Image (cartoon, rainbow, N blue to C red; front, side, top):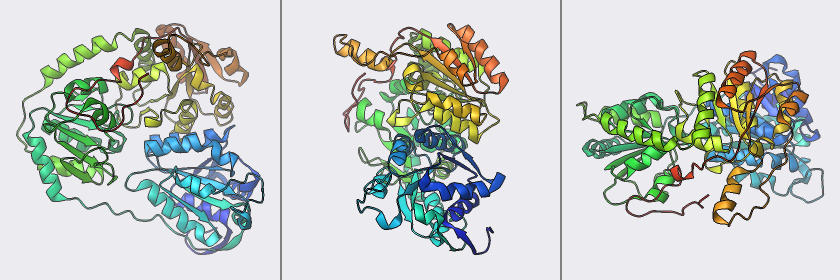
Length: 553
């Protein structure tokens, strides 16, 4: 095959070649008859293209998601149609919520029978329509010559503007069909224009403020330098929660936690929100006429979703923040160091009430290298980490965003490790969430992915049990768990495994596991942990709220 001149090839070959042209050299996928010709094309591409196969379709999509999150680049997975594609839906929906550029390659039944109800193997009515509900772009490849252009169009959609997953589906017969295929390189993505007048108006609002606050989300991860410049010019604290952590290192003097951000929100006289839905703040903390909000977002629909902002800037966060920094006065502003030091003292006392979680998190932080990747599943340790885990840079802390998808963690960590093989990756899971993908220990061994799974076992879906205890008179149902011996379970797959009952033992075990550079598991038996929710589900502190409030755990 040639990447520069038209050539006779199958659709499968055309897709593989097109993925390589776009810098994608890995496909996370399970084989199946509907995609045989795609897999054959991948095999014949040789070492230039690899297929990593997990033990369940859901994990193929989670691995692509993890790889996309840590690299910021498009990643691909494939699944057979119907039940195979549906098995990946949770991960695809999570990618949609997180704005991850994941490409789903969905098999299909024979092209002549699509949506005709004949009862073909794995037939799913209107599969393409279903995919369109979970992606930014979805299309069907109908012939070999269409493949390069559609791959380019899909990846351009996934990586431009508000990044999100995309999908291409292809019939079993079409994958194997041969035809003359012309190459198609990546589609150039023009940066959106900057509204200079809007930037000036935004700068004027922020420059007038005496107590500005910056709130950031996942859309700021590639704009760290410009974010820092704006924050330091404004002397504005920067609050992050799940997705934006590390864009400004949490060690920076202006970085504050989500809970500290709530305290600052009540007295803020201007807010700059960058790459965030600003949902918690507007829907729960409250807004009023005395709080002008400047929004920066890649999605033109986002700034006004709850209420019209004082100024909405649509485009690339790094470019807009740089333009804003240039417009802000150069004169130094009064330092807020004393105020923030007092705030941190208050928060340290409050977060210190989560003694067990903080002890174990401290042990993991001590053992994990500064550039190590921390993946939190939906678990008690994860909830605390969202508030207090130190993050020195972007894409080092992976949290599942507003979907909060239980069980996403281990497969996502495997994908992160596959994409960045030289980095240390730790997945922190509860016993409930870990068992969603526990069989993927086999995948870690098969592909030598040295992820360390730290499994905290309390014998329950802990958050569910807490809700039943506190809100339903301790009437417990369907929250208790029967678990394997996690150490023996891991060893049966060929992993090294430890049991650690204290933070000190966990730190020692984790250091040993990371030094071995091999798949590993650490089992941490724990009791019921103190609730973090009073530091997350925070009350209204000003004005009114817009939008529905979440249910209280």
